[in-house]
Length: 117
Image 1 (cartoon, rainbow, N blue to C red):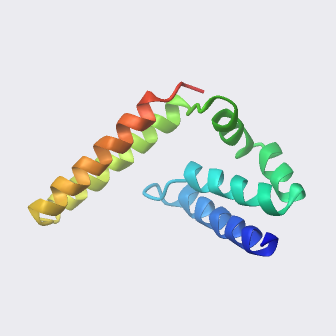
Image 2: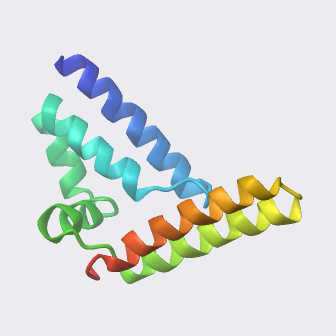
Image 3: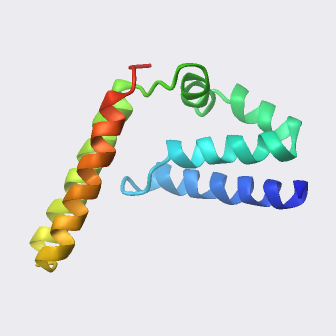
């Protein structure tokens, strides 16, 4: 199972890197997934991720306190709002807009209910 966990961690890291470049793809959830996968497959990869200058703080904040930085909260909220607005401008069906707005609202409530990092 360890090789499968490692491959999943690698895929999650690739998605996190894509999230750095594309604002509509979340970065931190993929980093958290990578940390979980690497913890089950490779102590070396898990340690590297936790000690990384850019990625480590967000992962440690989440693992230790379930915290999300205020900057990340704002960035994710703005991206979710942009996604809904783009769907509206592109004349998405009303049922899809309602579903999307409901999902985004639930996610935003969860994000903003977490302590600040």
